[in-house]
Image (cartoon, rainbow, N blue to C red; front, side, top):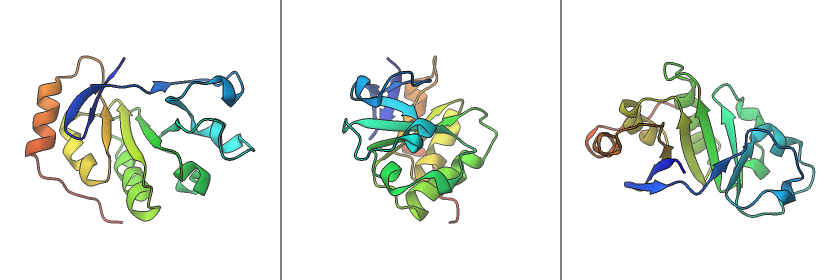
Length: 151
């Protein structure tokens, strides 16, 4: 399991990222993170399981976040390049413009030093990259100023 920072704690992440959906959604267990594109194509709502989430890349347009997607318990932004600032804007858009109420997570290739600003943009949890220094990550979150990007 990956490590997760959520509510000031380091936890084992119960969510499992599914990269490619090859079965009906009913075949995936609770706490499965499915590609956003798969959930957008799904025709029947509500979903068969309550605890399914979606992951997506930083270039995902805000127009894809329908009411059904915004009702999911977890949305996870998968960062490919920590220097691509679009994930800050996307987090701000989801939480402040689209009023997403669920857990917003950052995963992938981000810097621990970016976590405080991301928290200020509305990010609730962080899936830590392999080999991350958890103590340093908590220090950053607890001791750095938080700034939110303008909406």
